[in-house]
Every structure is written in structure tokens, then in C-alpha cells.
Image 1 (cartoon, rainbow, N blue to C red):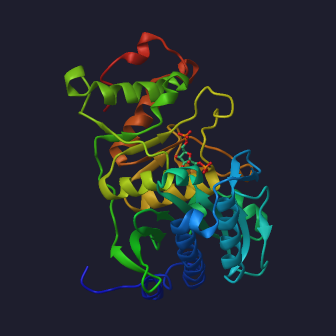
Image 2 (image 1 turned 135 degrees about the vertical axis):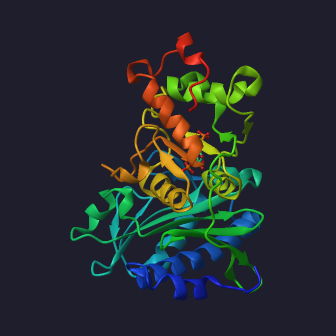
Amino acid sequence: MDERVTLRSHLDQSASPAPHGVAAGEVIEAIAMAAIDLASLIGDGPLAGITGRNGGINPDGDIQRDIDVAADDMMRRALRNAPVAAILSEEAALPETLNAEAPLCVAFDPLDGSANLENNISVGTIFSVRPRGNDILSTFFEPGTAQCAAGFIVYGPQTTLVLALGGRVDIFILDRRVREFVLTARSVRVAPDTPEFAINASNRRHWHGPVRTYIDECLAGTGGGGAADFNMRWIGSLVAESLRILVRGGVFLYPADARPGYREGRLRLLYEAHPMALVMEWAGGAASTGRRRILELGAKSPHQRVPLIMGSARGVRDVAAIHEVIEPMFDNSDAPLFARRGLFL
Ligand code: FBP
């Protein structure tokens, strides 16, 4: 990209015409500043006193590490100085009101996939911004279509900010020398039809019929009657998988399965699935539970889980088509019916 566009100048240009654009720009800048500090802390890790040891259990039953607590504090501090009426963090049981008069509400996962840090694998912060409704806390329970901005930061070899704002998705990389995000990809588009899937295949025995059928078809390849020869990736880090999909397409699946605690999937609707779905859709991709569009769902509780299938439009459409063919009552069957080929459209 010839001209150097910083996040700040990008927000000045593109945030203001969007609904709630000026306020959204301030929120995004606050999150970006927190992310810059968090990137240095993550980069130093044990050198900065981060042990990775457990700090307890968060409200949703996940192990909480010292870095999760630090990331949560950083995000909260940043958002207190932004036009934010209420926040909902993965690390707290309930939403918290900040400035009741402010125009926006923010749900966030301060540090997704923190267990990956032990192995120096990419982790991230995910955020979802929506206009405050009359009843502040009910704002979080509106469908994902209410979001006016969303995105995520990947703390990896580079610190990358993916931003969905004003109906498009742009990517920025942190210039560490000057502590500024710089635009590197404008209006990114998800490739419509990449034969690549990402799923934790160790759960195969627990999957329901439609997911098993889809993955079996991917694995069969053209030699086995499948529609294409698929490649597979599984990083176990939602932000890293999402960035890969934006860069080269493919489909990511974290489905519901038969394990206790996974009947609604693993990922959380408000600060994982909703923001990722907005990013995917605004980049021309799709996001679904297999049966319903993620953005049309409203949460019933702050930490509600949801099956998430997202990425290239064709892949998500194929998974949804298989869900239509296979009766829900046979969902968890191992019957040979589910091994049949040729279900892709
Ligand atoms: P947390 O929200 O608990 O940090 O975990 C989320 C996550 O790490 C995602 O980033 C990833 O897609 C998924 O869990 C991996 O789950 P599993 O270990 O079950 O494959």
C-alpha cells in the first residue's frame, strides 16, 4: 500500500459517516491502545512476570490465567474513558454499567485462547460494539445485526487488527516503533470457495450427523466421490483461524456435539460468534449455526454458547444444505446413511 494510513486517520475518514461513527471511532481507538499495551505484555510474557498460572475460574467455568486477568483490566480501563454505556466481558458474570448516558455498549473477550500462550501460539482480543438501547443491559440481548462495529486483534508474529466498520473490513498491523496501527489491507473479501476446513477432529465421535457428513465428504476428496480435495488446518485459536479465513478462505467449524457442556457448541455468542459473524459477512463470507444465521440470533444469557460455522460462503452454504437434508432426529446417528457421498450442492 503506497500511502501510510494510520488507524486514527482511517477512523477520522471512515468512522464519522457511519451511524454512531464518531463514538465508535473513539471506542475502537481505546481498544487499540489497550491492545498495544497488551501486545507488549504478551510479547514479554514471563519476562514481565506473566506466569501463565491459574488465577481462578471465570464465570463460565473456564480456567483463568494471570494474563486473562491483566487483559481484562486493560480493556476495562480503556473503555472507562470511551463513550461506553455498558460492557460485558468474558471474565465477568454480568454486564457492568459505565456511563449510562453514553451511546454504545461493548462486549469483549479480552484474551481468547490464552492457553495457547504456553506454546507461543497466537491469541487475541475480540470485540463487538452496538448502540445502547433504552434499557442499557437489554442492548446485549438484541440480535447480532444490531452491531455497528466489531473486530479482533491477533497477537502473533505481528499484532494485527481486523476491523469491521461502516459495512467493510480492513486490516491493520501494529508498527511497534511508533505504537500505531497502520492500514495494510482495505475492504478485504473472503474467497468464496476455498477447499480448506478447520475443526477439532478429535471430537468426531461426538459430532452430530450433518457435521460428520460434511467433514467425511471433505476428507473423501475427488478420488472418493467428494466435490474437491480439501486441505485441513486447526490452530485451536479462534482469532488466528479467522484471520486465515480472511486471507485465504476456507470454513471453520466449532459445532454443537454430544459431550456434556457442548450441546450448544463451545464458543460464546456475544463476544465470539457475533463479532466474527459481522466480520465474515461484511467481508463477503457467511456465518451460521448450520441451521440459522448467527447475526439473527439474540442471546438469552450473557455467556450463551452457540455452534459456529463460518468462512467462505460456499462452505457455509454446503454445511447448511446438509443440515437441511439430515433430519434433526438423526442428528447424532452413526448410521451408514451419514457416510453417503454427494451431498454438496
Ligand atoms: P477460550 O474462550 O476459553 O479462551 O477458548 C476459546 C478457544 O481457544 C478458541 O480460540 C478455539 O477455537 C477453541 O477454544 C478451541 O477449543 P478446543 O480446545 O475445544 O478445540
